[in-house]
Structures are given as C-alpha cells and as structure tokens.
Length: 330
Image 1 (cartoon, one colour):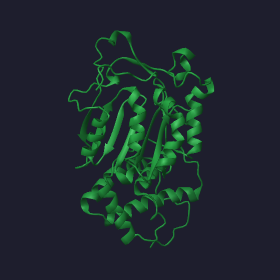
Image 2: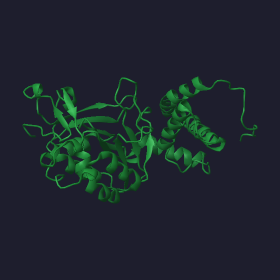
Image 3: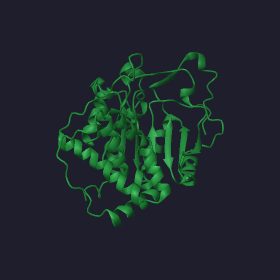
Image 4: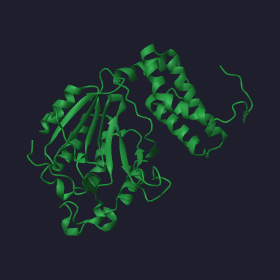
C-alpha cells in the first residue's frame, strides 16, 4: 500500500486540500440492495496500478466480456444537460459480448488515455459470471461480484487493502481536466508523443464505439442478477419458453432494452409501428419469465422493471385507441 496516492493527470485536487487529503489506497465493500450474496466494492488505487488491475481483472473473465464506455460526445443529442443549470450528463455505451482476449487487445493502445482523461470512465463486465469493473471519471474503481472472497484476494494481490474509513478522491475539492488541456511536456510519459487529435476523448472514444459496435444505454435502470439467478432464468426460458422470439437473448439485456424503449417513448418515439410493437413484446417476454419464476426471483424482476413500467403508464394518454388491429394472442 502506497503512502501517497498518485492520481491520474485528469483529476487534480484544489491546492487547499493538499495537506488534508489522506492519500491512502484501499477498498470497502457492502451488500447490494435486494441481493443476499452480491457485493459492491469501492476502491482507490495508485494510477500506476490501474493498468495492471484492468488487465488482470480481464483474466477473471476467461471467455468473453462486454466493454463499458462513459464520455462526453460532441454530438449534443448523445450528451444532454441534466438541467439548464447543470453540466452535460455523459453518454454511456455498452459493447456486445466479445472474446475477452480480443477486447483486451483492442483497448490496450487506448488504455493510458482512458485512465488519465478526467472526462472518461470505462470498464468491462460479464453478467453471466456475476463480475463487473468500472473506473469512473472520478477515478474510483467500482466492482460488482457475487464472490467477495475472490475479489478481496484480487485487490490484496495488488496491495490494495480493506479500509473501514475509506476516503475517496471525490470527497475533496477537485477539478476534472481533459488531456487536451495539458502542455505536451506535462503529460504522462506514455502520452507525451501523441497528437492533439489522438488526445481528444471525443475522438478516441468515438473510435472505440465504432470498433466495438457499441450502443448507447440509459443509466436509469440499475440492477444486479447473480449467477445463480441468471442460471435459474436461463433454465426457465429453456424449459418453458423454448422457441420464443427472445429465448436466445440475454435476460439482463432484455431488462435494459425495456428501459431504453420506455426512455425513447418518454422523449418522443421515432421508430415505426413494427419497432414500437417489438418494444412491447420485450415487456411481454419479461412478464412470461416473472410468471414462471419462483416468488422471490419474480418479485425481484418485478421491482427492477417497476420504474420504467410506471413511466410508461404515466405517458400513455388514451389506452382505448389502437394503431393496429387486434390479433389473437397465444
């Protein structure tokens, strides 16, 4: 454990906090709400360790993973203000599942820029393995896992120890800095030779979204399904919903798709009637799983979708009208 936490270039504490900031690495953990055996880890580590933590974490996902990217695109339609008085909200993108080795090989040339830019967050995850890592623009590591012993051991091997009184960089006054805001000589050595366009997060993040064919997601829906719960759902679908239109889709993806569909309806649905009906079919598929799942799991899924359900109900102005003829339901 280091005595003085070395921060990425893109996060700088105000001078008045220099002597009060504890400069200590460490992690804390807590049970996730509505999960008996899933944990959230929050950690801070010396910036020189982040690259190794990312690459070593990938080894815990030996088959495949998806990439998470959070940044501020130049397109105002992708990054909008949360209100007129607040700064824009970063856009969040997920990739499809990709072989982990391929994912890692692709992000390695970008890794130092992702780590050091003060307006970028990124991570990788595999929901089926119950594992996720995210390194935020606040330069805080967040992990989700259903195996806290393995993750504790992982952090100890990187000399990041448990701390009951963990203080985060965001607990103290600080500024976020873009890599474009530094003179060339003040950049970390690994970045000093890059051009301005290479250092522009809106460009290199856009490159990554294109390489991985990433899609934008809304951060309104937050949930965690353990491996056991996902295995239960997969078995239910295989046994009782075989041949269904969405039987091969990952269930967590369906939950996110439903939330995204409702968000699009809330802000003005621009698709055609077929696309609108597909969104409703996603919710039908979720409901079919709820109806055949054990009561505890069914209640958890119902709670997850309750917020988008409520939003859609509130924006339906007249439910007596149909845009398409009724069809016989199975």
